[in-house]
Amino acid sequence: MIKLNQVSKVYRTKTIETLALNNISLEVAEGEFLSIMGPSGCGKSTLLNLIGLIDEPSEGKVEIAGESIENYASKHAAKFRNERLGFIFQSFHLINDLSVIDNVELPLLYRNVGARKRRELAEEALVKVGLRNRMKHFPSQLSGGQKQRVAIARAIVGNPQIILADEPTGNLDSVMGNEIMGILIRLNQEQNTTIVMVTHDESMAQKTNRLVRLFDGSQVS
Image (cartoon, rainbow, N blue to C red; front, side, top):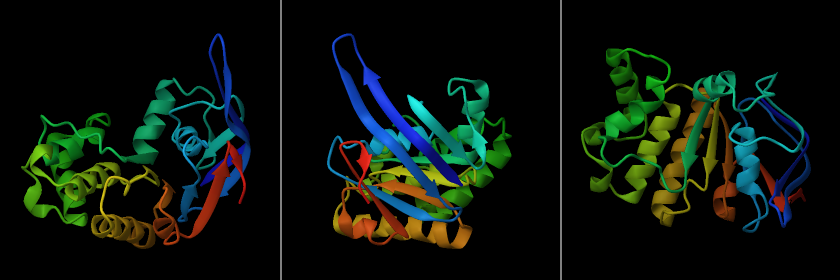
C-alpha cells in the first residue's frame, strides 16, 4: 500500500542545510498498522508528511497504492489526498466556529458530495467513534478525548484506504489515549484500513502490528 524507495529529505536555507531524512526504504502492506518512534527532531513527522503527499522528497520515490505522485502541488495530488488518505493530528485541527458534524463533513465538500449524503456519512462516522449525542456541539464544548474522536471521524468519513496519525494520543491522559487507540485498532481490524502512526509512547506503539524506529533521520530498526 505504501512504498518508499531510498527517500531523503533536505531542508535548505541561505545559511544552513538540514538533513531531515536519510535514505529511507520502507514498505507498508495493505491493512497493516505501523507505528513510527524516535526522539524529537528525528524525522518522524517529516516521514508522515512525505507519505501523506504534503511534502516532497529531495531524493527517492514515494508510491501510494501503486501510484507514484510526481507533482505534489498538482490538482491530481490534492484529489488523491482527499480520496485516499485520512489525517489525524495531535492538536485536532478542528474549526471552533463549526459544529461537530460540520467539522466532520468538511473533507466531503471537496468531493462535491451532496448535502444530504454528506450529513448521512458524517453521522455514520460519528456513531463509529461513539459521539452520536455530540453532533450539534461545538469543539469548545468537548473534552480532549472527544475532540480527538471528532478528528478521527473527520479522517474516516470519506472511507480512506490509509490513515496517517501524528501523535493521536499525545495530548490525552492514559485512559483517553487507550480509548483512542481502541478506535484505531477497530478501524484497522474491521475495515482493513492501513494506518501509519507517529508516537512517542512505547505502550501505544506496542499495540500496533509493527514498529519502525528513527534516529537522526535514519531508520535504525
